[in-house]
Length: 348
Image (cartoon, rainbow, N blue to C red; front, side, top):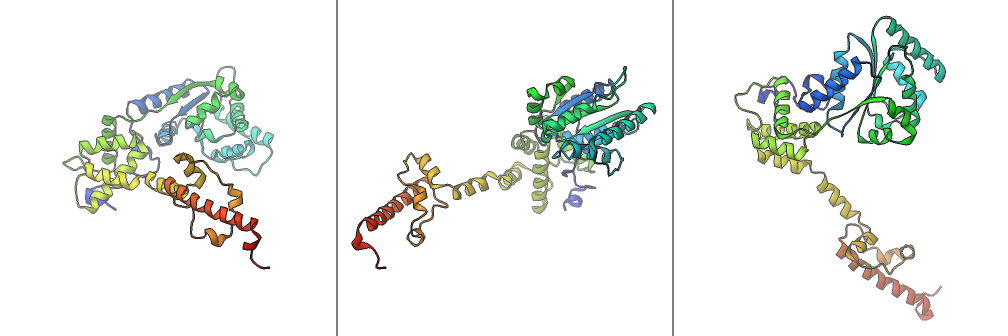
């Protein structure tokens, strides 16, 4: 799209976890070092926990590349599953295609693979991404995998990666045995303004940018850091859209005005607020305006539709809902009067 305009070989702010684009700032470098140390020390279980978009998966892919020649690795990301399905996903990732459905037999097949790798002097590394989605029973199955060991060392190293909900699960009493086996819990923190600038520069450099001027002005970078709250995935979104706008305007640098315009376009809250207003129920609107509800809404549903057809509660503000309620109340009173007054009834 804009690659040739800015002199880029490729898109620098993509959405895939390409290890080449991993920016190892202080926080990510420390997390990576902790993971490597834990694996080399045969600690068994490690946990990597961070908010969405912080670069967990990219960091894990980088880690797997590092151990590619010295370990048998498996990356499991299908975590909406039961224990039997998890074992099948794991065996598939290990290249052990099997139609076996018996859980015990799958466990035996996995054990044979472990022993084979141990005899070859290779590590065995399993990464479970999005582990916060795993049911407690499946997490218990993962724990049992770590029981394969010799008197001197663990035969398998397991990294559980996920969002903060994973920490909540690990802290629950029913998973106390698993929590006790997690030797290190590693986190990732948002990027600072200076780190955001280096993050952007790193990705542009990998993509081939050699311009004389910084593609993002310093104040634009600071604004992107503020809007994204230092989250790498959000930084990528703002950078991609800002560069797209700069390209459309034939500008060689991204400034704060462009970032502000992109922020406005990406502000989904303006749509949610508008939709929420349209979906405001009369009862909710009255609650926010301090007006009591004198009408039984179940009764209102039985009113003649023609009588209220022109007055729909959808899309009303609280004040408009109150006005609408009053009109419906008048209709209701009129309807009740017609029931009580035989002379006003329609002839049969």
